Length: 312
Ligand code: CP
Image (cartoon, rainbow, N blue to C red):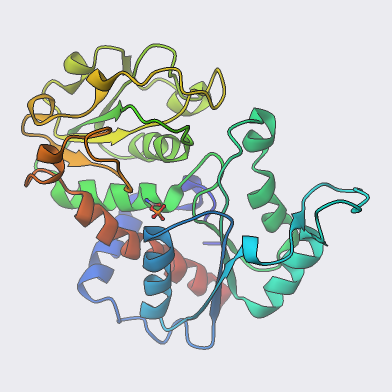
């Protein structure tokens, strides 16, 4: 693997999921692979799971890890040809090349603005690091995608599925703040590559990017969509068409035990209790959110392993 910025960087998904499950059984098997190799993780935004699980994954492979909260460093410029006489002190052109001298792999977390759709869709932060860094880049959640989360979700569903083609429903949920579409986008993209029966349910007007949903069925009736579901993945996203707006906070879309039935409940976390999902669901045996979070380590570990193998 040359990089992991999007799901399609995985050349054989089923094999990769199988390998990740094996790594989970024997996490230190490849601890010599990353010896004298360094992962630099750059955070433009907050994180709990991604930060700790990716660091753990790298250390399981014997790597050294350095973490930079980018907002503590010099403010970066991303535009070409700018007269840098305002707030930005360093161009990403230099920064990415300099960091590449300290790192064998660079991982980047950079959320969208949710105010400038064109800028967000261009993935200018992630793409700038891809362009100017001289080492492989890993996406730890960008403006439009969260491929490490999606790989962890695919591992979780593969481990827990009780039938060859489970029904998986992605259900929008209310949230007081404008959240990115990244998790939903990558989850849909990932499920389209797995042997599952995927349905998306959300209020009318909350359509994700059609380039991502493609032919996946969308049902505006949540109750109907949830019928006979095996896995229900709940996630809020802000409006994609009326970009970044919170147009609906209808609490009837919150996931409840009654609506969930016997399905397994999934969420990437962090989650707002009794806004996105009621306590009874999160505290039930049907909730697999802690397993999902554990699988973040093995998703990151298989990705780092495949990149390290490519560096040899
Ligand atoms: N799911 C996820 O990416 O969690 P963090 O934002 O805490 O990293």
